[in-house]
Image (cartoon, rainbow, N blue to C red; front, side, top):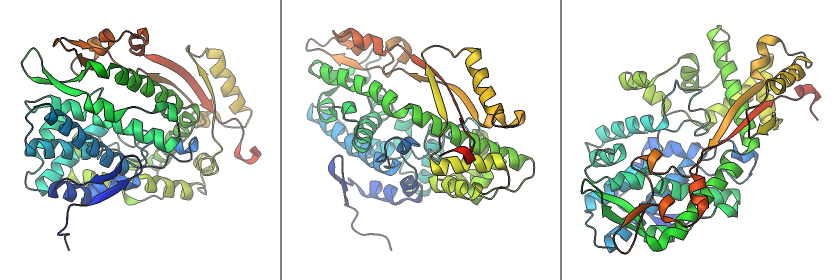
Amino acid sequence: MASSNKKKIFNDPVYGFITIPSDLIYDLVEHRYFQRLRRIKQLGMSEFVYPGALHTRFHHALGAMHLMGQAIQALRGKGHLITEAECEAVQAAILLHDLGHGPFSHVLEHTILNGVHHESLSLLLMQDINWEFGGALTLAIRMFEGTYERPFFHQLISSQLDMDRMDYLNRDCFYTGVAEGTIGADRIIKMLDLAKDAGQKDRLVVEAKGILSIENFLNARRLMYWQVYLHKTSLCAEAMLIQLIRRARFLISRGTAVPASPALTLFLSRAVTLADFESHPEYLQAFSELDDYDIWSAIKIWSRHPDRVLADLCARMLERKLFKIILSDQPLAEEVILDVQQQLVRQNIPSDELSYFIHSGIATNAAYLSSQEARTDNILIKFKNGRVADIADASDLPGIKALANIVRRYYVCWARNPMNNDQ
């Protein structure tokens, strides 16, 4: 029976009590698509590094909705007209912005699916809910897409200073224990304002007295990427997960039985594209049933699979026998890769199986994209005289300009020892 009391309160460990602001938001939280986010971890494989990193996309979405409510209050307090319909719509949009994440969030985004970005799937799922709710999300979808005539709402949802980033930095710091990544979200939100752009449309800006908080925000984001999101151990665990999924897909393509849940089996056996999702509703429904548990259940089963490659990789994951890694600021010399391959050959791994036990890549991080690269979502500072400037130009810290540089780290990771030799 549907609840008659929809003014619920969540006790959030990061912000304290979070209130569900409307009946629509309550119904969205209760929807099966949103409840699925309870079963998708926010930080993918980071729990292999930080044991406390077990929070989910469900936590994050509620937190982002809470911060959005605070941002709207701050803007209203400065005399900006925001209707109740706009307030509800932008909170609904940020609440649902991560619906399209698959198992382990970003890790398998381009492995299970065929180049389908999670934001595209979020939009399809929002449209599906909108049909079910009789058009109640039409305004929220316009804000999410960036087609609404007041562009600052889209900036609050998706930009370089949005409520998404505000929450995940706060929340990921809390659950990993990386205190250096702490940001002053409350102060930043209180410093938000609006200013007219060249087209006389309201753009999101930050009052000049909030510059120090923005500088801290950008530095914290840079630190969190290298210390958490792109941690070398996480890179190894992610590489192993990608390789075992690759092996499972290969075996299925050869006609070998690889038991898994119906939803996972569907995406392992077919290269589903965005066009497939748009034209075949059954794919979207199957995706809405897919979560971390499908993958872990499969890994447990596959660890005893007759195929030794799949079984080996899965057993390593279950026992945390992770790949080793070499990181470099420069592209790795060919000799380094050849040496790693020779190590694998000495483990009696056949040449046609080597690719499953070695993975190379590039980890990139730019804490801030200046106005030239970002085009419309750069962080703008508003001075008392009304002048508006990019944070990179407004800040007197030379480090802010340096944060706009894309930093690349090259790596190769591999299975150093056969499983039966691991201690």
